[in-house]
Amino acid sequence: MEKQNSAEYIINIKNLDLFYGKFQALIAVDMLAQKNMITALIGPSGCGKSTLLRCLNRMNDLIRGVIITGKIEINNLDIYSKSTDVTELRKNVGMVFQRPNPFPLSIYDNVVYGLRVAGVRNKTELDEIAEKSLRGAWLWDQVKDKLHHSGLELPLDQQQRLCIARLLAVQPEVILMDEPCSSLDPIATMKIEELMIELKKEYTIVIVTHNMQQASRVSDFTGYMLLGEMIEFDKTVNIFTRPSNKLTEEYISGKYG
Amino acid sequence: MRVNPKYTQWGAVTILTGATIFTILILVFIIFFILEKGLPVLGLSFLTENPQEMGKAGGIFPTLIGTIILPVFALLIATPLGISTSVYLAEYTKETRITKVIRFGTDCLAGIPSIIFGLFGYIFFVITLGLGWSILSGGLTLAVMVLPTIIRTSEEAIRAVPNSYRKVSFSLGASRWQTVKKVVLPNALPGIVTGIMLSVGRSIGETAAVIFTAGSSLRIPSSVFDSTRTMAVHFYILAREGISSENAYGTAATLIIAVLFVNLLAYYTMHRFIAKRS
Image 1 (spheres, one colour):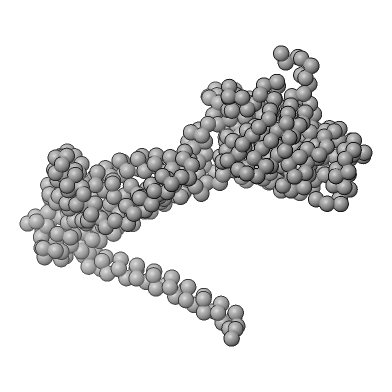
Image 2: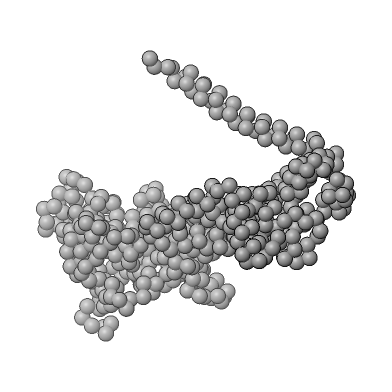
């Protein structure tokens, strides 16, 4: 089943419409995201890129009055079908938010949160995964001596990497990032970008960004969205060097947005 | 004509500072007044001896017991009930007309004079359920009385927990209950404890609701079916019946010190808790 023709596409969005009450936020969106690639979603504010991202782990379920039609498949499974276990889906499709948001708990407790809610009690297992996850987020060396200090004591970029480590601990396949660098300075941003490129060896990443240069630096594929529509979706090189749609070209060259 | 902002600023600061100082002065004056009259009577024997001649002489030991046991009993019932209700209201229901009615209802209940609760407790617990004047009746009545306060303060505290914590928790695969247990309640705890402390204060100082339901027996209760007398009720009876104004003030002073002590204890425990968590 997994090794069929669309196996390399881990995410497959088909004809997705989304309404917030009467307002249509996504209009007939199609998108394919490949395994172990970084897919960036760009576009001006209100274009629906964050909304689209939140569809992928069903975080939109938490907003009242959201109606979705169309289909999203992750690993060939329709995530909006009745038989989908939303908890399992969210573990498989993790999310990094705009602002670093560690819980007001120790660094260690932050990292193992997802494991604990999943019922893991074994101390050795928790310790092992905590170390592995912190290493994976390039944070181990900075925090290994203060695992029981509050996560909020860390500088912002380390907080964001703590949030990434917290995510890695539940071993997702897909990582969604919603403008993960928007509250970080350029050096911290660069570190997160390098980390993303490292992470894609094992994970598939979809990132929403306001920063076009960031998309061009880190992503393999880019989708340009405008007013709820996917205007163009292509390899990042093509989007930034020879976009086929005039709207994309005008946005890339800074005529609006 | 436009007044120079410099003057309005000066005026505002003066009024605000003045109001604050005035408030503190009233508080200090009341405490000083009570302590001045009460402290001379207060001593170890006053606290540990049984009253004689209806409280004219002797100590207040039984009322100390009553003052501890009634609020504890009331809070043991009201706290789990109140917190559960507030979690339900804040986390598990959508904002509908029904939740608005519930909220309006609890607000109204919080504003009802305590003597009405006393009357209700007397008719329902004492007479209808046949519990008589007892710790049980008094505790249940106090629980009903402080329930709205606990519900509303807890609900506010729960709502004040940043939504991002919930979102992250869900995104890591936690259920709503796990999120409530592990993230929401620990962060709402200071607010919840504030509500509980307000309730402890209210039940310690309550007379009207207690005198109708727990009675005013000066014997040391041996079970929850026995009547008891709290310090507040004791003070009321001593002063009202003109039995002994010295002992009345002594009781009042003990009451004030007890309330102060409870608040300090709560404050200290909470800070310990917060420090331990972060």
